[in-house]
Length: 80
Image 1 (tube, rainbow, N blue to C red):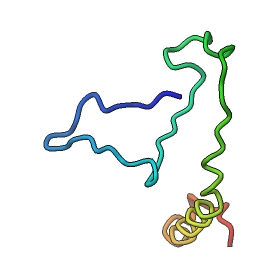
Image 2 (image 1 turned 120 degrees about the vertical axis):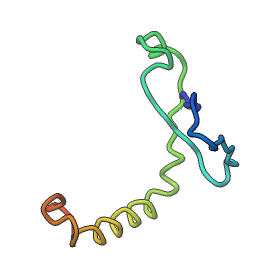
Image 3 (image 1 turned 90 degrees about the horizontal axis):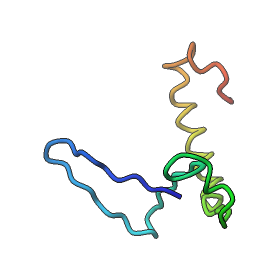
């Protein structure tokens, strides 16, 4: 897993560390530095985000319903 750090901040902005009990940053990709060498290394399947799956799906569905009147032509697939 590779976490990105900000290389260049906007004027007056800084980085803030968030405690793990408030949230995680997961950024997955095949290999950290390109290539496929890491595919054969030991790895862990991380399903921690499943903890929040139901509330996330519910929240996204709510936002999509709220956007539907404004974005009818763009979001015709919205669930009623």
